[in-house]
Length: 424
Image (cartoon, rainbow, N blue to C red; front, side):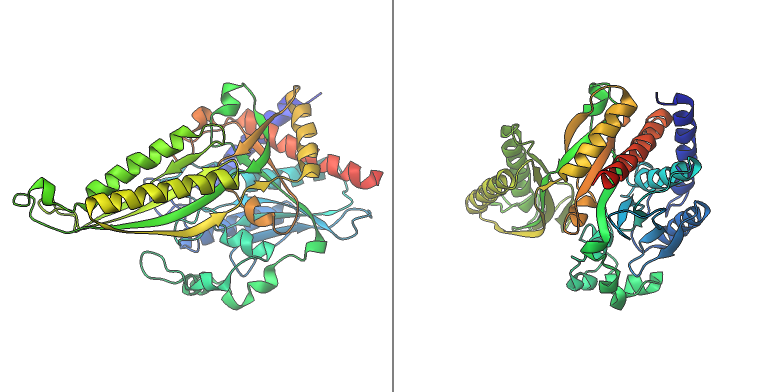
C-alpha cells in the first residue's frame, strides 16, 4: 500500500523547494531565469547546497550544470556505474515554476527517501541540474545536457545572445570553463541510464484523471528562421496592386502553415510561428522586411520532414505571387527519440503501483534533456499531471499530492532497476 500521508508530506516539501527556486528571477514581476545569468548562478548555488544537505558530493561543472553524486552502497554487477537523474533549472521568459525545476527537486527528494529507508543501491546515483534546456538566451537548446552526453559542438560557443554576448564569454563570466567542456562528458561505460521527471505540459493526464504517465518517446522537432523581403513605401500613396508588402506575405504564410499542420492529426503534427520582427516598424510605412521563426514537431521524422517540405513549397508560391524574396533556413533539428525499453518498463511498473491502476503511455511533444542523453545511454521519463495542461506560463500548476506521487514513482523505479541488477 502506498503511504498517502508520506506522499503528501513529500509533495509539500517539493512545493517549498519549488517556491524557493521561483524566488530567483531576473524580474520582480515574473519568473525569468536564463542560462549563464546571475539568476542562473544563484539558483545553481541553491541546488548545490541542497545536494550537500542530502549527503551528495556536489560540484558545478564547466558548463554550469550542478552535479550531485552518491556512490554505490553495495557491490553489484554494474560495478561503479551510475544512474543519472535530472532536469533543468533555466526557464523561459515569464515562466511557470514547475517546468524543469520539479525534475531536479524530485531527484533530490528521491535520494532523501532512499536514505531515510536505509536502502543501499548496487549502483551510484547522480542528480543533474542542467542549465540550458530552453534555449532562450542563445539560439540553441540542450547545451548542458549535450555537454554531459559528449555531443556538444564547440562552434556553438560563438553563438551570441541579443546583446551580442557570445556563449563563450558568458560562460567565462559565469565562472565556467569553455576549454573544459569536453572533459565533462560521461564515458558511456560509466552510465546505466538517464531518468527524468517532468510535468506533462499538456492536458492528457488531467483528462484521463491520472496523476502520472509513462513517456514512450520525444517527438521529432525542427526550428527554422524565415526572412521575407519586400519593399517599403508610403502607406497612403502606393496602390494595393503595386505593393510588395512583406508582412502581408508573412501573414499568408503563417495561415498556410497552420492549415498544413491541421491536416495531419495522425502524426501529432504541430507547427508554431512564435516570434516575428517587422521592419521598419512604422504605422505609415509598408513593411519592407519580416523575420519570423517556425517550430515544427511530429510523431515521426518523415511526417515532420514532409510537413516542412510542404511549408517551404507554399512559401515559394507566395514569394512568386507577391514578388517578395524569401529565405528559409533550418537552425535546429532533433530526430524522433524513443525511450529505452528497460527504463520504460521499470517506470510503467512503478507508476502503476503508485497510482493503483495501469499507467498511461504518452508521446512527449515537448523536447527535453533526454534528447541529448539518448546519445549517451538509454533514457526514460515520468510525466506528472499539470492543471489545464498549461506550461511556459505563470499559471502552470501541479498539486502537492501529484508531486509526492511522482517522487514515490521515481523511488520505485530506482528500486525496480536495483532488483533487476540483483537478478542478473
